[in-house]
Image 1 (cartoon, rainbow, N blue to C red):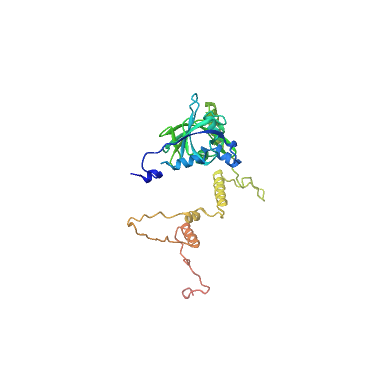
Image 2 (tube, rainbow, N blue to C red; image 1 turned 90 degrees about the vertical axis):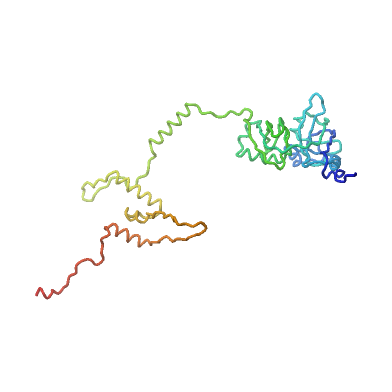
Length: 337
């Protein structure tokens, strides 16, 4: 029976295979090249294929994204890698590869390669090794690499890929991949790790440096910085007598109170009054709280005048009674006549 879906490649049946031999060239040999297209091709993991490849692939039961295995036909080398497709704009019989991919396959301009359609699993893990210590000068290297990997469709273990960031080229060797040695990184969650770069030496502090730093910190703590003390000089009286001395503790208390008042932007006041104003009532926990029920309890508010009045009463022992004195009259009483 005629199967229309299988004939049109719309599902059902095994994944089709496709293979073709093409001559490989680097990006500058592309006839319609410009600077943007060259950079897009050189610093990514995709290639340019002829339009005939697209026609053949559309007749087969292919999976997206389109991924290909590239192999050098030289039997002495047998080098291979994987790539996605950028566009189908190459001339017939030609394909254009990134410079790092040409080096990976040990190709010269015009060498033959085999292009095989390949379905790859989604990546779950990748480990990269920077090929230069310049990589550590980047403020956020992980974010940079995640952005640049969007120009790649797949990765192959052992490849040395190249990316461009801030007009500088960085190379990375793919050290490990999971679940296989060749994976696709399109629309998947991948865990990225880094190996130490070539020539990178982790800075280690010697014991002498640790001792010097410890001694410097101890000296800094033992000698506190000089603190400005206002009105710390000596005074003189007009009558020539020796002024009364003030204890050091009183000076320190006055200095601390004046500095705190200056930092808060208010005038200093008596200790009792300020304590009464600044004291906060203890937080009362509502033990009868019912889940889902909100109660808006107002805290009793006292004005500044009322707080000052309470502070003065507390200062006087709370015994002050208005109009509590004795009265006198100008005219003597009758009993005294």
